[in-house]
Length: 536
Image: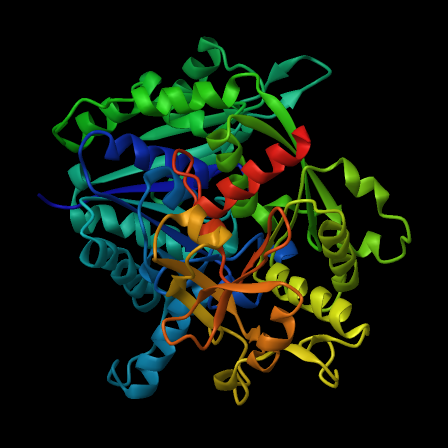
């Protein structure tokens, strides 16, 4: 079978939901018996989002092979329940870096390097690498940004060329657009969608399907209007009203016959009838009224919750596994630095400190960790949250505020967190951290070992600094247990306190491996402890 490619573009405005739509569509196709992969084409000139502030582009999602990628790849993996690789996220920076390196080697035999064909050819090469490296039979390709952005033009031109290269039966174009609501007249408007499709067609791409997003119900009359003016069959105009849970979107797409339509147009045979029973039960469980548990997430990027997308989803998955709803309060760590009274944190059943970089808000996080330790509130620390848990305990042990990470105080007398030895001579920031999946050996009888129920686990990392082994014995006197270690025993991967109901930190990022119907064991254990705390 020839690989089928489904290309998704966006119209009217950004953040319209292309990523979730691609992820949901991937699930839809997987349910019909096909192996699916998704690729994100990002128009920015950065090589990857690894050096970008979360305020710029949300969280950086790390793949098993260590690629730092767009947060949409998190959606892809969670919905499809697959592990993607670095070819599944392509940026303008990567493409130009590739072309320039080829030109320097003389690969182009002295020719003039141009956007067409050189840039577009490399983009098409990157697209074709997806089925080669993943074995996917159907590849979904999402173009970041919005039609009309100058940055997206080379990618859109490459997608236009793909139809000629692979044939119409092997290509399918979906345009995800937004219908604005005019409050004064109480109506949705299709004109921006019409203009967006016209812009797309002027590039040479005629969409085979339009997914119309809105916060308000989309009537049949509007579907007919979009069909008429955008030259798309009516049953290929899919209304996608904002839903109460993202995980309902595959069911909506299936209800409107999206899978059947794509299979008809691409001449694919349905290998199996989709069985949505488990998925429907999961969505129903999410909607069912349950006990509500308050959880505090103390971070430094809380103004943009996309910065903690995977953390939020992993918490929700764990709430579902424990049959509770979570009321998540996002607390800016900097706001705690000037507070002497943190008694308001007593109302939370659990406190979580996620990862991050830089010194802003660090002392506020440490104060929240101290409050969790002293008041026996369940605590989960992720990456930096684990490191600061160590710092807080060291300050308590030494009776000194000087204990710190050398990331924040290079001259600290007690560098309980320090730069990894192999990081000391590195000057480039991009793609040089400890990245990707590494094994972790669990110590019997610990909270971590009980949560996992396994001896060895594989987890994804993204950090430069580590627990300083010179302080292992000293901090163990305060009750710190090193419950997860690297295979050689050299690196502390999980630390926990033995005289606390649940106080645990991971050097890795467990949130990246959580799935809606298979919550991560550590998040599940954390929420279980939070439920027990709330009942005491």
